[in-house]
Length: 124
Image (cartoon, rainbow, N blue to C red; front, side):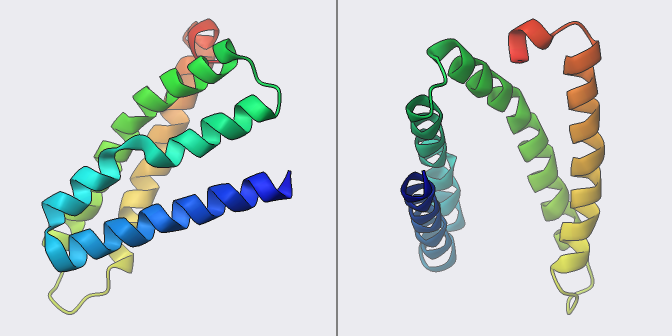
């Protein structure tokens, strides 16, 4: 089990390193496009499969992830907005913290919507 988690860690780190390099030294759009391919989710799906989860379960995870991307989009936009409007010498951390608070709020709402809105058979 540990070796599979280590593979996921190494792949995730590689994706972050490549994305960071592309966005920093080539072009921010190239970094964003590369990052948009769900390569980091493939080891997760493989890990789930090798640990006995059936295709229906994995499909529900991927379906849930599709809607969770709205959270990602909102949070990324919020970080961008807060950074753009931050004082010039301010660290990135206040922007990250503010957007994280929004992420927590909307994540809880998303979970409650699925859990108590009658959608658990589609997502869980």
